[in-house]
Image (tube, rainbow, N blue to C red; front, side, top):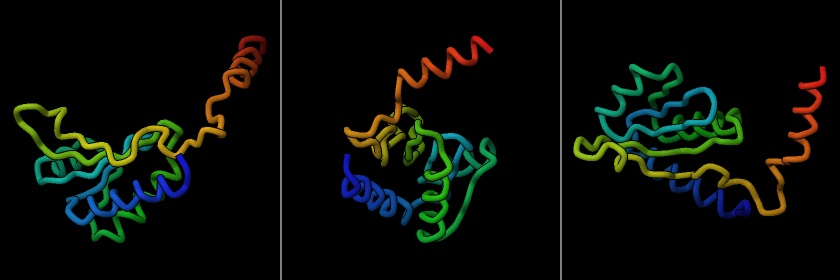
Length: 121
């Protein structure tokens, strides 16, 4: 994916922010937009990192969380669906969406070297 593609995904996040009740982050890589009162209440009760605000505030917060998240990061909009809770999740930015083909975010050789150092220290 190139920069233009990720920018398009951020435009979809901004569109979703216009109707979001709040945004929430697990402090690692899970970033959510609560799209209704039910989900907003759930995130408010279960997440420490939540922000209410206008679209600009939510987008600034999301961008900051994105930059602070680990490489497994993603952004999803969540709406309550009593009959099928999993269908309430809509992916706005998938995991690894910002990794380009020529980037090697996961370097197995480097991991093996790091693991070997830990094991032998």
